[in-house]
Length: 256
Ligand code: ADP
Ligand code: MG
Image (cartoon, rainbow, N blue to C red; front, side, top):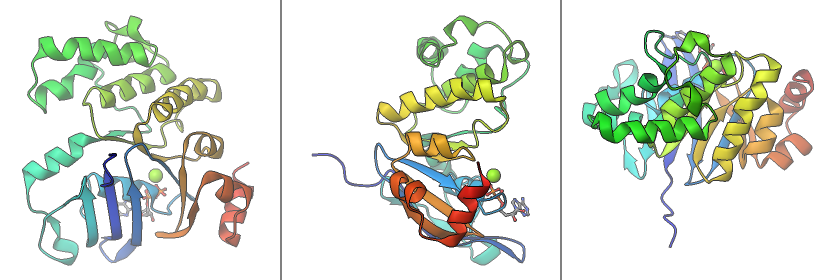
């Protein structure tokens, strides 16, 4: 029987920066194999939701459950933070993040970049991790770039290396924050192809993107955020084909 427990469940999330409330009660569920796209204008809170989900940011209210296990909190309001560092590590390493700016280590080869976190964060053995790292670099189509440094790669290749690095953690889900925004249009496609392959093999993913074509292409569920609230959500056919909210209609007509 398939496991019905969601991989990630965010419920009634609230987040403020000082007196500025930026997430005002957002709930999102990702079950195994779900691809959830998060869309919305700049400043609507998309990155903040992802960063709260993998506990890079504290949040003031709401629950975050990883495979049914609720984050345990200490303190209240602006002082609330996760109580258990081991739990934070477990959740963060299982929700691997891919950023807009790749964030590869410039002084390490591509292979070293991909092997770094499994070895230093998870304490895995180098000899055991290396073939896994090579496997994921092959998978994203840059298996021949193991021994070069990031600066020798194109942006699209660097982002594919960053995806291989996230995969090498063998996480339960991948979180992408605008993975193609820093790329020239012709390089975007090679990254989108990799993301589409990952979706087709049933990986659980949450993808923040400005690229409505990619969202329509790879996601099962689209969430449109407006000023820290979910304005509309549903399957891509409905959200892009027959948007109900006027704000979403306006947003979609401004993105082409
Ligand atoms: P998006 O990713 O949708 O563009 P963000 O989640 O980055 O939006 O930001 C949501 C809101 O939170 C914006 O108003 C932004 O200015 C604010 N914000 C984001 N990060 C910080 C921060 N570190 N300190 C203060 N305000 C922030
Ligand atoms: Mg953002």
